[in-house]
Length: 202
Image (cartoon, rainbow, N blue to C red):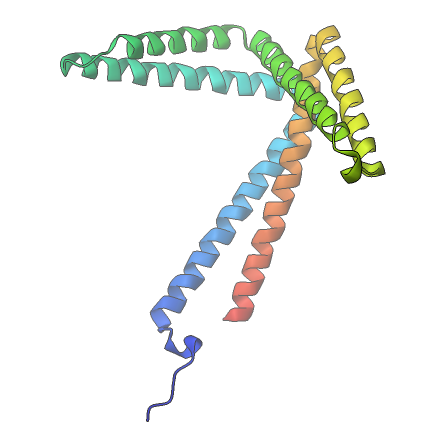
């Protein structure tokens, strides 16, 4: 009677080599992603306004390309006898908006950061009210404290967004920079752990 083979013994050398290669490529991808995240985080923290301007330029260029692609699709739809008016309108609006952003990237950075921080402030207030509205049986000190902090911080953030619209760019850039820095460092650590586990497995 043949003895049962273990799962590890049933794996062929080619499959284990494929898994090892896949693990190495995943580790390399995470490493490069982490490095880019750290660099972007540092740029956003130390050069917030310049980084916001550069991002605005990227957004403007992307909208122009997207608008041109949509316009090309509209011409294809017209040749095929399909409805094309809305697609062409979308393309033209995207191109015009992209050109406007490229011409005044600073204004776009201020306006976009104002709306982003405004929505963030509204979300914090709603979250705080929800936490404070928890039934008495499920409420504790931490829930009340977190709800009150969210409401207060959301109101302060909204007031600052209205009173100092230019400073919103700095605030949003710093928050995004810290977030990118944390994600970048985490990706680098995970990539080294993946490499280490792959070396021990081989």
